[in-house]
Length: 501
Image (cartoon, rainbow, N blue to C red; front, side, top):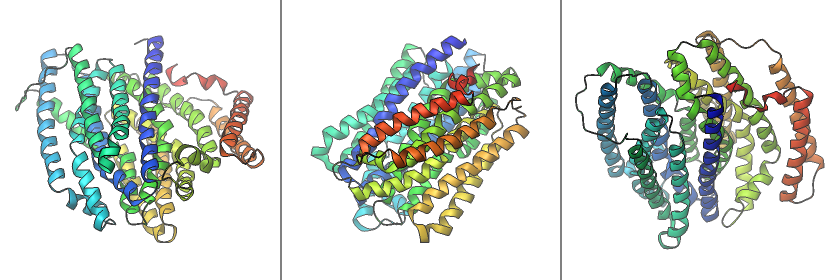
């Protein structure tokens, strides 16, 4: 794929993903409108935690490993047999798993979210039993997307995600007057079915829809290689979702509403980074796999360091602005219906902490893709385990008694930064990626410091006693000042996705 075509694909995928993530975020806004930061809001968030975890973690691991192996195979017959074997065992495993989740829903919810009792435990387990089947359709949707991406068919996967999120929102709005809180469960399942249906249609158009049961494969070496990639990715690539899972486990032990507040704040932080990383990595990952096969390490190194600079330039200013305007932003987006001023304060406090680690979380996702593409997945797994189960939980355990939900948010932020530093060191040592000899990183850090000072001054002195006007006027001034700083520090050339040079 030439550079012009690559930019076109990234552009279209980015636009579709923006719309998809927008509808996904609207779902959180609707939860806030209906339930605010109440125990019912906590139940909705917790009920979908495990299905969403399986979708993103298990589905992501299978898809990543599949693309890595499939893109390097040359024999069409071997490809089809490999294809059938993956389908067979994935379907059986997921059917058994979903059946277990549904049969033992109350026990599973009580085990993972031990702070729930009485009616809240019953409500959460009922919602969980309804939403559990969505995991089957979502995981297969992720895999179908991977099959299409491996054939350079990127648009259909993005469209399917857009339809999934859009249908979820539409169904909740339509069903809520009749089903109440259960509309969220049925909406999750129906929208997942719609998503997989759209992807299957696109598979059929590309003649990739033939799935047959195959119990024994003659390409066992490919299956073994896939498992060697998938199992580490299952742990290493699950870092962000494990953070979310652990956040909710500990928050369920606090007073009602903090599960929801943490969810609203974390989803807001994930929105810009998810748009950027989903769009770019969807297109870049197959390219990285091919560069690895060609042993083009100079090209990989260039993509790596230029990509980090681009992420820094885009995410850091956004993080700084959101930090200073957290309460105004939460009020503008969420404070309607059952979402009260108290809900705004709870969510804004979490948001201020989360945005400090926003760049680290996005960069971790970007960096780990290089280790997976080069089939060196030990480092992402090791750093992920140390960060999530070591640093993160240690911080929460030490401080949750005194600081409550703040300790949960700080655990995520500090451990994400810690993992980022470990990954950067490992990328230079293990992957032998060579940083370009330039002074731009120093200028980038100076730029970040100046932007922080500017945002602080703007927020303090540009005050119209109206949160909407403050965000609008402060945002315009901040953007203009940031642009001037880019020119002053001679960083404006980075505006053009330098990772693609």
